[in-house]
Length: 101
Image 1 (cartoon, rainbow, N blue to C red):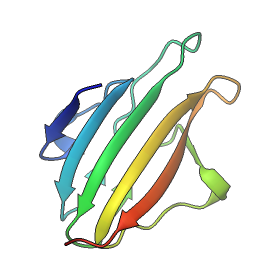
Image 2: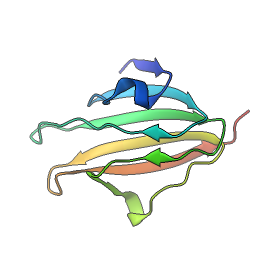
Image 3: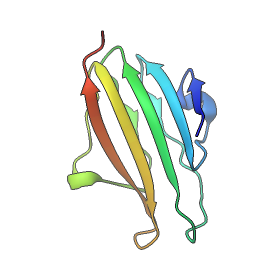
Image 4: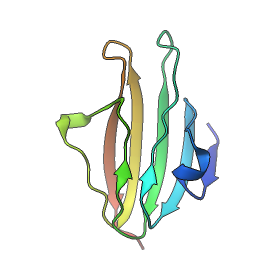
């Protein structure tokens, strides 16, 4: 997939399934996850460069890997959303890839 540069998740209003995004953020972000067809695989990948500790408002239709809501400090992250059709929810995983250069 082509990586789409965006200024903010908030600007999008709603992320699109099966897309890859890149964002630099220093303020709170609100995630808008789409409704999906549960008969096909649905994923969203965000490459995040957090230049400050930020809060992410994840929404209500999510569960987290290891049942822990991730904290986002300064650094580089991959945020992975995968729709689980059995749970009918988005499963969210956050991987910190390193400190900001």
